Every structure is written in structure tokens, then in C-alpha cells.
Image (tube, rainbow, N blue to C red; front, top):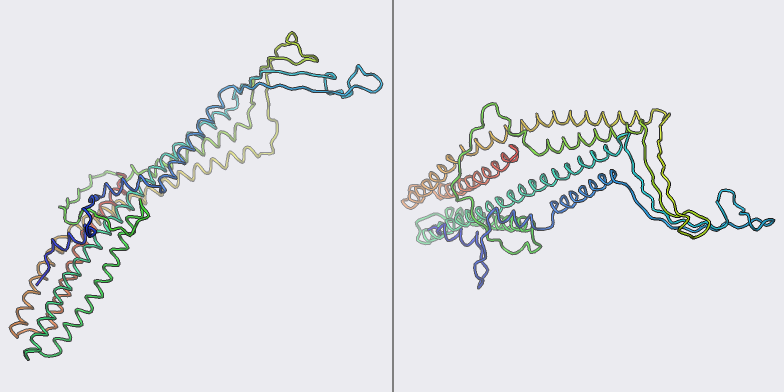
Length: 425
């Protein structure tokens, strides 16, 4: 009467190619590992983190002296009336030779370099947090695709079982009709049910192929190759843990770290803008040759101390610093709003996990009752006490009950994954 469930599940979940040895069965952890190893948004975020690291190196270089060695030769045409005098007053002679080692050290009396370093550190931290966020989102997307594939293949099995049951009933109704023991209407009902189930079976198979494509696309372009995945829908489900009283696990979410990095970045920008209002000093040391003839005896050294004092900037610097201060307050406001939203998301996710877990017992009971109802409907029909419509209705009820059960299991696994994200795990 019914195809064994184990045989169908093995055929649809493993899906080994003909004449091919069994490929490795992928768990959810395997799929996540493959997705993280492939080129993805995580790769881009990792590159952005490396870019931010180089920015920090550049900011630190501002505290080190800049050293360069320059060589030059200048020719100044002599005057027409006196060949021993040069014509351009701004130059030192007819021929000038320079070969100097120059070191420049910024003293950062205004705090501009320190502010640039603080901004670079904030950018580095923000890039690191963004990398972790991208990895988390990729893992969640892979998990959703993984559970969707399992559910789609499970629904294919359910539809196959329903189709086998429908064909068996159609065969029995045809035999009874040919023997004059059943009406033609019974045969029509049974045949129409088979036609409906065949259409549902094709649709379920298409959904399973699409789900296979979605999961495989995370790490390969050969998305049409059937994946062999471990059936997590048959594994024992752990009940949800009650939340601790007066706890706020959602405050561990990475988004708060990102907002903190943004806040520190805007504070650094404000300090860097205010630095334009303070004096900035630098020290320059030169050693080498700057002479009218090329002779190392002419070498010497010079030292300069520069101090730039801003006098008037038409309030531009103050306005720019004020802008960054307001952006800092915006981040603080966003943090408070985000905390409330994350509190809502966490409580919603926790309630959803508990509700779906409580529903699993009812869906299992529905499956058992629907199986018994179908059995009794077949018995009544065989005994002439029931109608073909009762059998068809019982078949539809059993199919829907099985679909509801496996959908609830997949929804529970997805809800637990959402709860982990909402709790900052």
C-alpha cells in the first residue's frame, strides 16, 4: 500500500548518481565552512578590514620623522653687462649645487595627528565588527537555505507517499468498478485525486531543485549537482531554554560594537577639526651641500622650528567640529533606538521558538490521527459503508498533516537560529 519512508528518504536526501560512489554527506557546519571558504561578501569585508589596517599604519607614521635625500643643480644665466653676476636675484649664484638630507618632525601641538590616529583606530574596529557581522549573516543565510532544502525534499517524500496511496486507491476503485461493485463517480474521484497529486509532486520536485541551487550557490557554480545533506529534521529537537530573569542578552549583539566604533570615529573627527584652531609646530633639520661649487668642504647643516598659529577662519573650523559632535549624538540616539528594537526582536524570537516547539507535539498527533483516519476510511469504503470522497478527503488530510509537521520542524530550527542572532550569540 505505502512505499517505505526510509527508502524514499534515502533516495531523495542522498540522491546518489547512478554508478557513482556515495559522496560525503554535508552537515550544516560543512555547508557553512564551504560558504566561508568561497568568494563572498565575507571576502569583501575581510579586504575592507585589511584596508583599514593599512590606514592605521599610515596614521601611526604621522608620529615618525619624514626623512628624504634630495639632489639638485641650478643654473642662473649671468647678466649681459657683467658675466660674473647672475641675472635672477632670487637665486644664489650662476651655478648652485644641492645635496641634502632633510628630516621633518611634526610635534603635533594641536592634536591633529593624534586625532587622525584615533579615527584610524575607529575605522579599523568598525571594519573588524563589520567582518564579523557579515560572517554572521552569511552563516544565517546558509542555515536558512540548508533547512529549506531539507524541508523541500521532505515535502517531495510526503507527496510521493500521497501519490502512491492515491494510485493504490485508484487501482482498487477501478477494480471495483469493473466488477460492478463501485460507481463510476468513485473512479472519477480517485483519478482526479491522482492527477492533482501528480501536479503537486512535480511542483514539490521543482521546489527541491531550486532549494538545491540556492544552497550550492554559496560555494560553487555547479548548482545543479544534487547535494547530499544530513537530515536534521529527523534529529531529536532540544527544547528552548527559558530566558534568565532581568537579563538583556541582546546587548551583546555586534551592532552595538559597530555603533561604538562609529561614535569614536566622529569624536576623533571633531578633535581633528578643532585642531585647526591650535598652533601646530614642526622641526626641520637639513644636512649636506648647498653651495656655488661642488665641494664637500662646503657642506653644513641647518635647523628650523616652524610654528603656525591660526588667527581667523570665519567660524569654518568651529562649525565643522560642531557637525561631528552632532553626528556623535546621532549615533548615541541610534544606539538607544536600536536597543529597544533589539529587545523587541529578542522577545519575539524567544516567544516564536517556544510557540513552535509547543506546536510540534500537536503536529505529530495530527499525523497519527490522520493516518488512522485514512485507514478507517479505506476499511469503510471496502466494506461499502463509506464513500470515495471520504477516502480522498482522508488522503488530503494526511498529506497536509505531514506537511504541517515537517514545516513546523524546519520553522523551529530556523526560529532557534534567529534567536541565536537576536541574543548576540
